Image 1: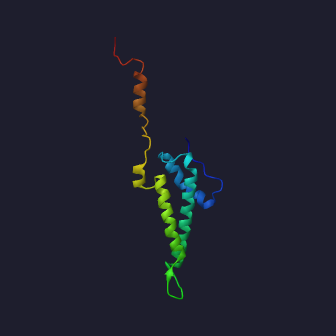
Image 2: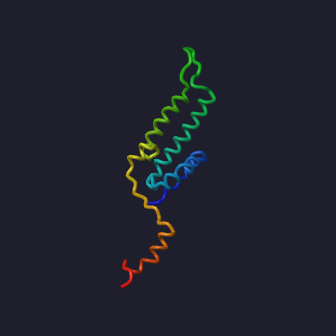
Image 3: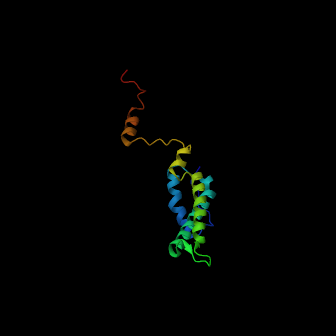
Length: 131
C-alpha cells in the first residue's frame, strides 16, 4: 500500500500542513493511502487551531462583557480543536504513547555494501569450502 495523496480540496494552508506531516509518517511506516481522510481532517484541524491561537495571541484570553471579562470564544474553540487533534492524533500514532500501541511491521535495515559484496562472493560455494 502506497503513500496517501493529498485530496484536491485542501487549501494552501492545509496542504502545507499535509506536506510537513505526511511524508514523515509515511517514511516511518505509520500511515498508508487508507489514512487519506483522517490525515486531511487532522491537517485541517491543525490549521484551524493555529488560526484560533493567533486570534487569542492578538486579543488575549478574555473579552469584555457587561457582567465582566469572559473567556474569549477563540480560546474556547482552540481548546475544543485541541481535544479533537489529540483524539485524531492518537488514531494516527502522533504521540509516543500512541505509537507504542501501534502494530507496525518490523523494518529490516538493508545490508551494508560490505555485507552485500560478501554475500555475492560467497553465494555460489554452497556454504562449503573446498571439496
